[in-house]
Amino acid sequence: MSPSPWSALVRRPSSRLAGRLAATALALTSLAALPAYACGGFFCFTQPVDQSAERILYVQEGGKITVHIQISYTGEDQNFSWILPLQKAPEGGGLKPSSDSVFQLLEQATSPQFQLNWKNTADCSGPQQCMYASAGGGDGTNGTKGGVQVLLQQNVGPYEAVVVKGTSSTELVDWLNANKFVQPQATKPLIEQYVKENYVFLALKLQKDKSAGDLVPIAVTLDEVGPCLPIRLTALATAPDMPIVTWVVGKARAIPKNFLHVEINDAAVDWMTAGGNYKTVVSKAVDLGSGHAFLTELAKKTKDLPIQFANPGWDAKDFEKVTDPGKFLALMLEKGLPRTTQIQGLIKKYVKKPDAYKDVSDQEYFNCIQNSGSMPSEGKCKEYLDAAVKAGFDGAAFAKDLNDLVIKPLQTLDSQYKAQPYLTRLYTTLSAEEMSKDPIFGYNAELPDVSNQHSADATPVCEAGSKIATKAKLKFADGFEMTLDIPKETQGSCGNFPGSPVGFGKGTGAVVAAGGQPLKRVQVLDEKGPPLEIDQKDADKVDAQLNTAQLGTPSLKPEFIASLAKVTWNPHSSTPGTPAPADHTDHDDGCSSGRGGEVGGLALLSLALGAWWLRRRRAVSSPSIG
Image 1: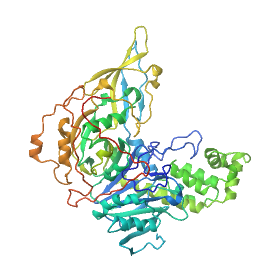
Image 2: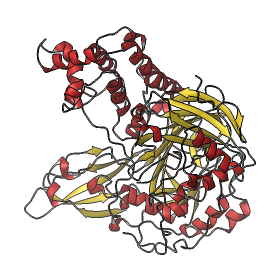
Image 3: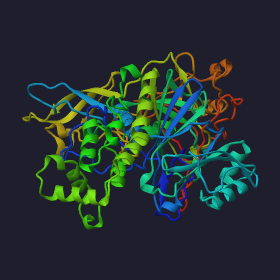
C-alpha cells in the first residue's frame, strides 16, 4: 500500500489503518441517464476503493485554482487527522466539501480505450468489433499560542478545519497534537522543509459527532496561476511505479513545464487483452524518458467532451418535506443522484438499520425499503421500512446533507467545467528516487487535441481448413505491422479480447516484444510553439535543464537546443540507440523553486507509518524490453 503524493499526513495508529486519497473507475458518463442496475437501487454494487493510483483534479479560473481531493480512511474515528501544506492560506470560502462522483465521471469520460478494426474475409473471420474502455470550530484553537498562528478556522462538511502557521516543525506538531490533529513525531523533519519555505498548513479532523463513515472529498481554492503537483516527500513512503493521473480544466491544453513529455508506442501494448500491460508500457516509456515525464492521455475541448456533473433537475427542496425513508430513496433514484460510496454512506446515516437486521445485506435492506412503495403491503420490504421508520428518520437533515455534500459541489463543478474551454488528462508513474521535484504545469493553446481512443487494423489469420482465426495481423497508423497469437481460450468470439477499462495500478503484463520499444518519442512541451522532439539518449540532459523551468519563459535556451543530438530513436527497433545512463542525479526542486514566486504551489505531505517503501533506482541500462 502506498500513500498519495498529494494526500496528506494521515495518522495511522497501526499498519492495518490507512488514510489516503482514492478514486474509483466505476463511473457514469452522465448523471442524467443512469444505467439500469439489475437490483434497481443504490446498493447494487460494492464500490471498490482503488488504492493503486492517485488522482487529482485542478480547475483553473484565471488566477485561482480549485483542487479536488478525495480522502479515504480505515481506522478509529478519533485517530483520523489530515494535514496539507499550502503556500498561502485559502481565503474565506476557499474550503468546501466535494463529491466522490467527480472522479468517477472523469474516469469514465477520459480513460484510454483500445479498439481493433477487424478486416474479416469470407474464409477467415476474427471476432466482432469490440471496444473496451480500456462555520466556527472549538477547542480553544483560535489565535496564537507558542509561536503557532491560527489563520483560519471553520467547519467543512464533517471536518473541523484549521489553517496554521509556525516558526518550527516542533511547535507545529506539538500544537497539532495538543489540539487533537494527531501527528506522529516522525513528521517533524518533513514538515520542517515546508516551514522553511514559509508554508502554512491546513489540518482536518472529524467533528465530535462525526465518524470515518462521514468522510467526503474536499475542494480547496487557492490564488494560483498554474497547477503544481506535490510529490517530493512521498519518496519516503511509496510503492514502485506509483501511477499518478492529473486532470486539468483550464484555458488550453495543459503541459508539463519542468518534466519531459512522452508518447507510447501502441505496438508495445497488448491488444489481445485490451491493454492488459498498459501500466507497464507507460512506466517503461517514462523510465526511458529520464523518469521525469508525463504522457498526455487526453486533451480535448470541453464543448466536444460534455461531462454532466450535475442533473439540471436537482433541487434539495424536493426532499426537505419527505418524511418516509422509502419515498426519499425512491425520489433520489428518480432524480438520478449518483450511485457512489458517498451516497451509500449518507443513506446508512439517515435510514437506520437496526441490529436485528445486521445479517441482512445492505443491498437487500436498503433497496427493499426504496422499492417498498411499489411492493405488496406485506412481506420483508414492509418489515424493513417499518423498522427504519421506528428507528427514526430525519428527512430535512438528510436533504441538507444531500445538498451540501453532493448537489451543490457537483452543480458548482458542472458550471466551472462548462465555463472553461479545455480538459487535459496527464499520466505518469513514479518511484521514490524519481520524486525529486514537484511537477508544475502550464498551458499551450497551439498544441493539437489528443484522443484517448487508440485503434489499429486487424486482419484475422486462420489455419488451413478453419474459418476461426488463431492469429491477428495488426497494422498501425505509422505503417508498422506485426502478427500476434490469439489466446486459445478466447478464439472465435467477441470475448477474444477480454478486459476491463484501462485502470491505474492495473495493466501490469509484459511489454509485447514484437512491437519494439514502449517509448515512441520524447518531447519538450512549452507554452508556445510545437513540441520539441529530442533523442532518447539526451533525455537526462534535457531533464536537468528543465529543473529550473519557469512559467512564462522558454524552458530551454536556443544554444542548448542547438547542442542536442539528431533524433535517431526508433521505437520499433530492438536496439534503437543508446539508453539514458542509470546513474544520473536529479535536482531537488519544489513547487515554488526556480520561479521567482510567480506560481505558488499546492504541496501536500504524505507518510505511511509502518510501510516505508525503499526502492532501488530503476537502471535504464539497456533498451531491452520485458
